Image (tube, one colour):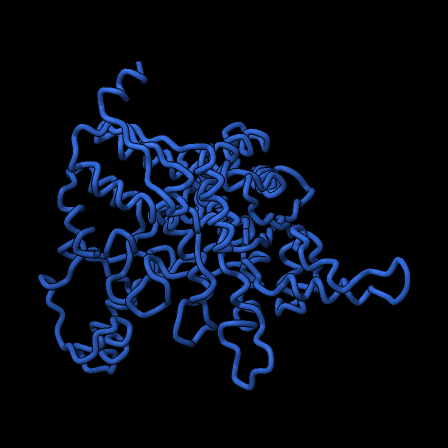
Length: 467
């Protein structure tokens, strides 16, 4: 990766290299500290910069004053006695830190450039089917977040940020909702996964890596990253482990480590890497203006909710039955903080996520709409692929219903649609290029259910009907 980046740098013009040199901070090659922390850099051939501390230790090592060991530890290169400048490469582009702007009087963001909540929701409606409440909550939260950032230094009233917790069954569109939001808004947004996070000092990603990914999404611009959005997926995987005698390094410890980041604090994060080490520069990011959105499927949370609701059941006439909530599609909407604490989320963590909302489980009608309506619907993608072979792909209305029913049986939400369509489209995609006389293919209900075949029309008939 570093070689590719360096090759790209070689292709740049002299003006572009000079502009990059002025835009990014100088970084000491030995200790990897930026100029803002290490002080004035000493420039050497091959575009290498060394801070005064490392240069002094170099001189001490040459004079036999014991600075050599410290220097080699900082450089992370044990056993090397001489530094050959011709063998040293430049700091990779992805590990360079942009200089902070001196003028901080202007507001960090222009409210006129951020669309209103109804405009954000309208853009999401073109790609995400259903989940009206979730889209409304996210639209309002994003708009209010940037209003808060813009007025941070303009008023004596401090607006608290509203971090969000998104709960929904698998395949209901949690990650896709945030991914779509990232495409539509010109703001730094990082999507990360909580499953790889561990407590500091253990194998895995450090907790600060979630902020490091946002910094990378902001092109290593600290000021831009400090007003971005971080989506932490699979947040239910860091729930407190029950009945364990070992140290919970990937559960409760991660929740506790995330507390100060969610609340807002100065965090030292590695630049261009997921974990801290001697060869990676560090920079400080303040998370007070970063909006956090956490999402998770929370399996078996519905059983906790039912257990709580069934405690209210009694004996006699007009009593609630214990199986009353077994087939309730909106059971997750009845979730409370007590249910989440029973699941394994600590109260301090939940207290820093004041906005909690749920996504509905997809129904058959919603799955049919997902097949047909979004701008990048999967069936539209297949139509486009066959159009390149001059073949018109059509679907009977009953075929849509058959695909949706098969997806419901898999119980994996919208993710099941892709596997089902790939299954019955395989033979069509394989056979169509063989016969140039085929002009139209109509997918039927029987073909989806593997009881028959598709309707195939020759090219001449298809062209006449199209006219």
